Image 1: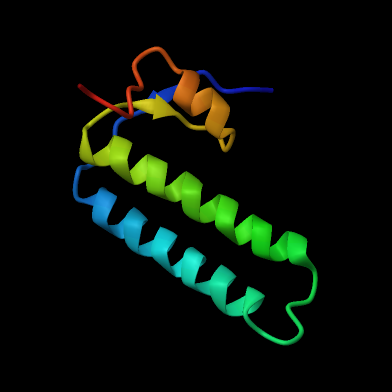
Image 2 (image 1 turned 180 degrees about the vertical axis):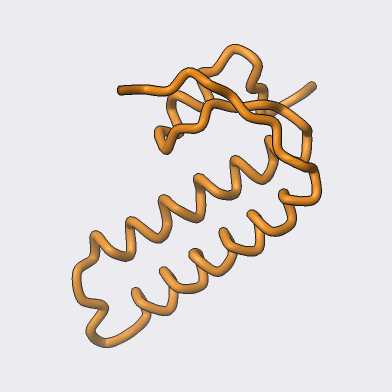
Length: 86
């Protein structure tokens, strides 16, 4: 069941989200850079997490409410989400 509810987070949360995203990215690069990275899907998972949290940090910083889902396509397609401005 999908939730259509959207939430507006405190703008200060953007910095925390970006920090977590950076940590996920560092973990992915570190894991991939080893001689035995294990299952590559774990590296890809960490990259996906980093991208998702980075996008959400931008939305939080811009004070844009977004759906509480993990599907980035759903978040980006939301009618009030605009990642880029002219």
